[in-house]
Image (cartoon, rainbow, N blue to C red; front, side, top):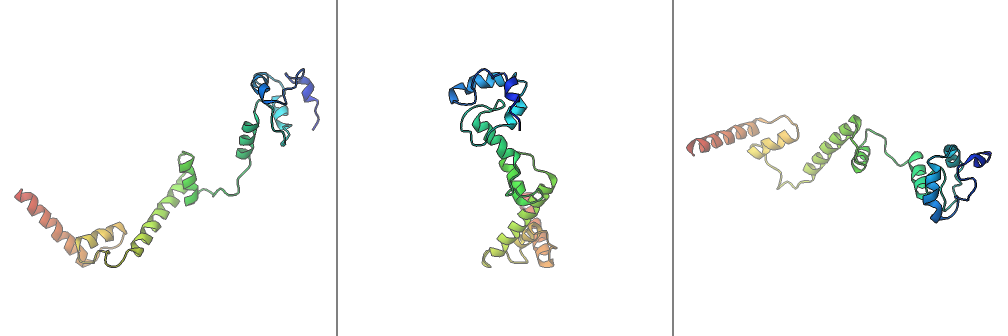
Length: 161
């Protein structure tokens, strides 16, 4: 890349490319510079200090990180991508929302499977009926009967009060 653009730069008479004290002043020059894009494109990656194209070293590094596709980013439509949207305070896309819903259902199913048998609600009880509902399962006859009994008892208690 040719360095002819430096002759047309607003800062051509000075050396704004070095020294952190000059950064504030150089940023002012860069806002009106006609070759700002060329300057930013010519930014030497090893340069520790100085302003190129109106950006300080940290701003250039942040811009370079955003410009590079990070191979570690999970693609949309996965639970990891949903979590990334959440961390970055972005609205999650529809594929990520669906993936998150599916992951939540799987997480709940694993949690129920890990529950000791002594804590699992037995079929034929109102709690068993609720468990079927949470799992989106077909409710068995004994649980449906127990649930109806529970509702009837609640109605009689309310009517008595």
